[in-house]
Length: 618
Image (cartoon, helix red, strand yellow):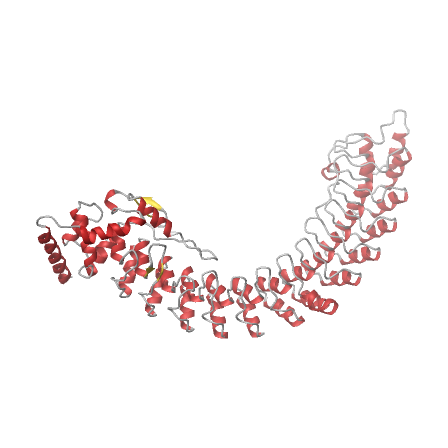
C-alpha cells in the first residue's frame, strides 16, 4: 500500500503555517488558540493554509488535543476535508499513528467511514501503519472492516498484503468479508496470502471460511498462486487441504489456460513443489487447453529436475498433445539435449511421429539445427534415414534445406543416405539433398555434400539432374563445380549446353566448356551471398519454392533468392526460362530438333577432349 498522502508538507518541512491560527495550532498552544478565536477580530476557524489544511488537521496530526478542543468549541467543522486529498482529521490522525487524536475525534462524533479520493477510510490508514490500537478504536466505533476502496481492496486485502497477522486476526474477529475479490487481479485475501507464502495468515483466513476453490481473474486458485511462487510448505498444506475438502476435482482444478497447480509448478521447474503436489495426489496426466501434460511442459520448458522427478514417479513417457507431439519430440524440437538424454534413457519411443508433417524427433531436431540433440538421438538408436509421413523428407534433407551444415556433417558421418529422395516443390518431383542444395543456390552446402559423401550426380528429378537444374536456373558456380567433378557423366547436359552455345545463349559462361574449369579450392563465393533461411516455426511451414520456381520460369530475368523469393539477375547470370507448360517442349527442341551448323561437331569433340584432359590432370 502506498504511503498516506495526507501528511501536511507544512508540518514536515517547517514552512510557514499561513496564519497565526495555524502556527498556534502547530505549537499546541490551546489556550492561545482559545483567546485568539474569542478576541475582537477572530480569524476564520476553518481557514486553509497554503497546503489546503485547516488548523484542526494540523492539531490532529500532531496530537494536540487541547487545540482540537478549542477549535471545535469555536465552530471548527470536524468533518472538513483537506483540499488536496479529501481526507478528514481522522484520516490524518490514523495515518500519523495518533491514537489519542483518533479517540478524541471519534468521541466528538467524526464520521468513522468517511472516504478519501481513493475510496479509503481511516481503517486503511491504521492498517498501513500496522497500528493495532487505532484499528481497534475504529472498529469499536463502528467503522466497517469490509469497506472497499476504488480498487475493490478491503482493509483485509491490505493487512494480508503487508503480512500483518495481528491486524488480519482483528479484522476477521470484526467480521471482515474473506470472499471479496479486488479489481485488478480479482484476488481474494487468500490468493494474496498464498502468493506471498504467508502460512499463518492463510491458516487464519481458512479458519474463518475462506474458500480454497476461489478463482481470480485468471481462474487461478490460491494453490495455483502458491505453486507459482514455489512456496513448498504452503503448497503441501493447501494441496492436502484441497484433497480433504474436495478431492481430486479441487486439487486438480484448472485455470483459464487449463493449467493445474502441478502444471504451474512444473513450469517453474521447482522439483520440491512438484513432489509436494504429487505426494498430495495431483494427477500428472491432466492436460492443459493445448493438450500438454506435466511431462510435456517439462520437456517444452527444459525443466530437467522436474522431468527427472516425473520420470521417477513413472508417468507416461509418450503422452501426446494436440499435434501428436510426444515429450521427446518437443524436447528435440526445442534443442533440450539434457531432457532428450533423460527421456531416451528412460525408454521414450524414438520414432514417434508428431506435427503436421509426421516428423520423428530426429527429423525435427535436424530441421531446427540442434546438433547435440541429433547426436544424442542417434547414439540412442534413432534411425537416421526414416522419412516424414507426408512428404518423405529425411533428417539429412531437412538439414540441407535449412542450411545446418554441422547437422549435415554429423548425419553423413553416421552414414545417412545422401541419395534419399523426397517430394520437392510442385514441378521438381523427387529431389535428393544435392538437388535441394542446387535449387536453393547454396553452393557451400553443395560442396559439403560432395566432400562428405558421394551423391549420385545423375539422379533425376522432374527438372533433371542437379547439373540440369543448375543450368535451368543459372547457377553458374554450381555448373562449374558439378562439371569439374563429372563432366563426362553429364552427356544430356552437354547437349543442352551445345544447343545454348549454338543459339548464342548468354546463360552459362561458355569459357567454362573450353577447359577453363577452376579447382574446387579456387571457386569464388556462391551466387547468393546468404544461404537459404526457411521459416522455422512449430508447424514447420516451408517456404513456397513452388511459386518462386514458377515465377522464375515465367520471368527469365529473375532468379530465386535465399528466402525463396524472385529477385533480379543480370543477363549473364541466367539462362532462358519458360513457362511450366512450355518446359517440355523447350527440352525436346534442345535434345531432338537442334542441329549443329558447319564445323560444330569438330568443336564439340574438341570441348570433350579438353574436358577429359583436365580431369586427367586433376
